[in-house]
Length: 255
Image (cartoon, rainbow, N blue to C red; front, side, top):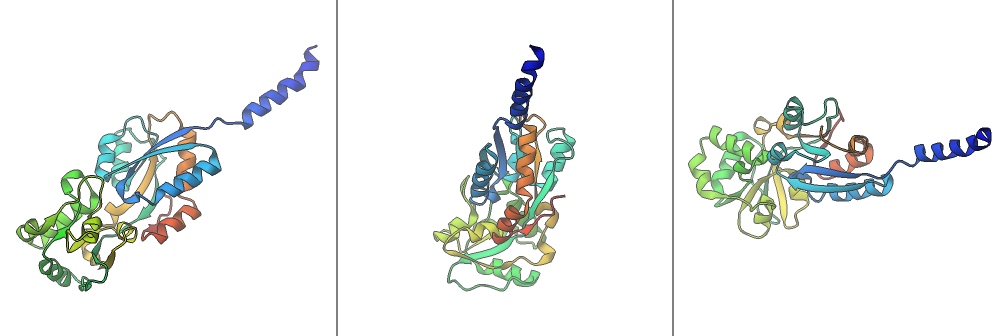
């Protein structure tokens, strides 16, 4: 009798090993990927059978919010800090892409020269209003621009011209709707917003590549570590990297 039932037991074991249950993966991502990763997540759901639940916040808020989510997407520096604090599992962080910071104007408006530090300074002085993320909310672009303004000795001038977008909105939106003459933003944000154009990237001396390299990591408290790793593997794969490149980001190397 035992021998007779062994084949059926083997079949059941085999079926169980092949049918991995679908997981729900909770993703906390930096705002810059809003409208870009939505479709990517949908493609992953179709190909994997898993469900992705995602939320976009400022990169700085990712540092504060990691709790019971499964995957975090933020700047590499933030994820490395979270790994030191044992909130991101060691060895799971992979680079997704690197961004830059640009000077954005309304579509059809004159595009000022921003190719040198002096030219950029003149462009800032020439506009009546400029929108950029409120640095107090932790956005990388707002923090960088605040530092630049201090170094250019333009703190008072920019304070009078500053227009902060409300939570959940981008600086380029204020340019598109006429509330601001220009915006300091990442190219991805401008390319997704009708009615605006990139006048040019900020000079290389003012960029901060290390602080604009975005990565993904698995949170230590995840209940779905395998599914979380598979999602990150998908995000660093060639198809998603191609999407990110088309949206104004430099493809990451996944390392």
